[in-house]
Image (cartoon, rainbow, N blue to C red; front, top):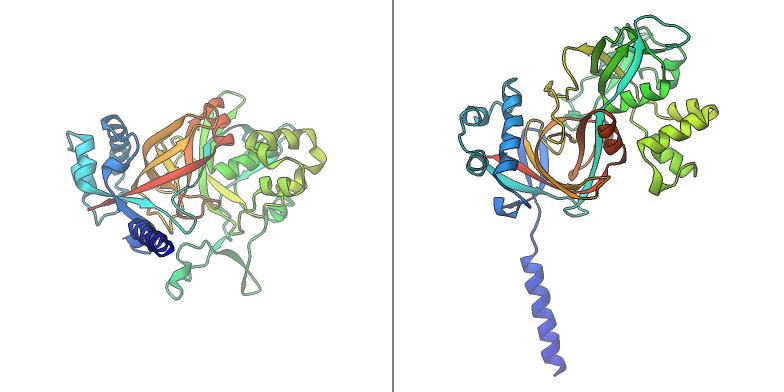
Length: 363
């Protein structure tokens, strides 16, 4: 009898091990390595014509700027497809992204902030928004070291040597020679603009300018939220954009130290439209995501399953990988663009959702 049960256990173990889906690595685009496994469109939760149609509309807007990888003739068919669902099911294969930790990752959120500003500096508007410095060097080593292709190396010349560019603290202390786009009234709002990457500035005469990320100083991004949790200033369960903002306003004596603990600094340029991503495409709320471009190719469609941070209801959408972020690293990882306004800020600031992510790979 013992032998019978032992053989049964061994058989069941081999059966379920054999049925487990094994991850594979693919290169949907040169220098992009994605891991996971292929599935059917029927495996996408809540996949339907309405979600396909909304995703196709965003893809067509992207195609108008010719930002889809040229080796795929996706746009030719996208622009004339009469049936959105059939278009995706015919022209793409579904690849469920997974890593060593499994198929569930993390989705955070971002938004387009609004700041109050002026073209001239004053006591009320003391904080500059800088354009790209003339002495900022791009150090390109990918030809010799391909593994550094997606590494942003920045520096400047000092005595014929390339040295790291100034940190956030050094720039705030005036160690920079760069054009000033305008001045704003809050260094907290300015910091979060750096995190979001683009936004708008409203002047006293009610005119508005759009600004977007053009470059960075090259220092790695350090999360002030993680610092504040580690120091016991805010609990891990309550950390969010909103709780960070409240703490800094109540404790102004700690504000500079906390903000400058992140050495990364972003430079901006004026835009003629709202928030745009790395591809140069105007972002679409709920349908544009920032990704790790070393793991997910920019311009490709993605289907995601996540959770609304306020209602806790499931959300499913077909999105486009149109942006990147220094804090967005990993395979099953994305940052969802929520749009503009108070509601967008509230949801983006609290978004920390479990994420399942499927990459649509052109056939």
